[in-house]
Image (cartoon, rainbow, N blue to C red):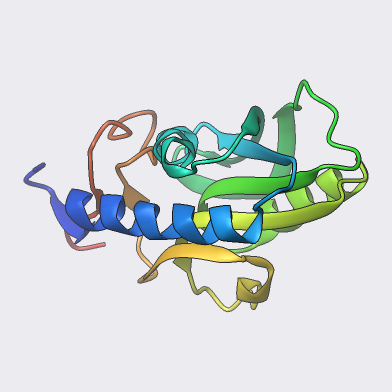
Length: 173
């Protein structure tokens, strides 16, 4: 464990919750053509672990958006690159690392809806209530967390800490 971090969600708890989420998703999408779309860079570890637990055929794709610079929100969401596969008529599960202000999620949902999926659901490892009132748009939530800047398990601070097996927050934040 990093000495400057408080552990908010342990590696063990993350893995247990992923197994539960995977069972729910598998049940909800049984017999359907599922495309799992990960939001890079933060969701890549969560998505990899999650799809390995989903015991049904599925396709994976990624897109990348930016809204932070030097650990601060810019207030603007920018598309860095889009998916490579069409999703029209398919059931789509968007995988996020964290939902907080809701700005990025709202942007992504509008963007994906223009591609005419049969259905569009959201799975986020973390949900941080910041008053955005967007929780009803997240179908699967791993953990509710306090309003602190978090790192680990895919989430970073200026490119560092992604490889931690747990989710932590800097002491004093």
